[in-house]
Amino acid sequence: MDEPPFATQRPEDPEVSFRSEKPGDIEQIHDLHISAFETGGEARLVRDLRHEKAFLPGMSLVAVADKNIIGHVLFSPLRIITKDLEIKAAALAPVAVLPAFQGRGIGTSLILYGLKTLGSLGVPCVLVLGSPAYYQRFGFDHSLVKHIDSPYQSEAFMGLELQNDVLKTLRGAKAVYARAFEALND
Ligand SMILES: CC(C)(COP(=O)(O)OP(=O)(O)OC[C@H]1O[C@@H](n2cnc3c(N)ncnc32)[C@H](O)[C@@H]1OP(=O)(O)O)[C@@H](O)C(=O)NCCC(=O)NCCS
Image 1 (cartoon, rainbow, N blue to C red):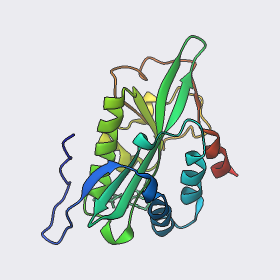
Image 2: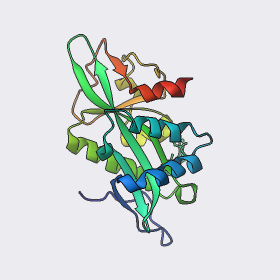
Image 3: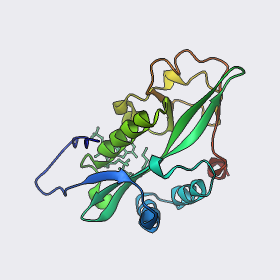
Image 4: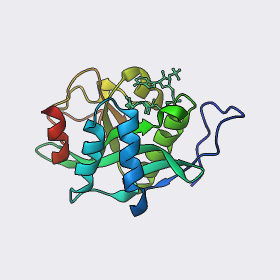
């Protein structure tokens, strides 16, 4: 798979590559979320999602520079159900880049790499809860999910279609998240 271009590339920026996580990455990924976020909630979310049956290492992606993990994005299986159908979607959460490497386009490239990976796995759509100013650049849009029953329903709750019209036409749908997300609401 081609690596996506950086949004910005300065001479001092490191060579960065992108790949799925390996078993030996788990500790570094944990430490990365501890460094990037103000609380340990996201590190715990990753740990808890890892223990769920539906966890797929192929949907946990890392950015690597000089053999060190400097970015991580996790997509976890998420069901969108209506009375007639079930869509096997993905939730994007969390994403983080080590503070020293932020603002150089690495998070953007990592998410683009992740979306391309999900597309090749046949995942039809992705939901996220986050900053519209950040996620709209990837095409995430609240209007696509405003009819979906979700504990996160708000302007910050957004969807992205990887297959045409999979969200746009949905009515009477409910998003069912992995159990690990419930701990975030406590
Ligand atoms: C958010 C994060 C993953 C972005 O990665 P990054 O490599 O720093 O981002 P990029 O260089 O690709 O993109 C930079 C852009 O992201 C924006 N941005 C960074 N953090 C942001 C945040 N928490 N909310 C909204 N926008 C954010 C910057 O303002 C910048 O915007 P611009 O391109 O319009 O100037 C990274 O900054 C990070 O780990 N932050 C702490 C953890 C976090 O908040 N994660 C959840 C994100 S909603």
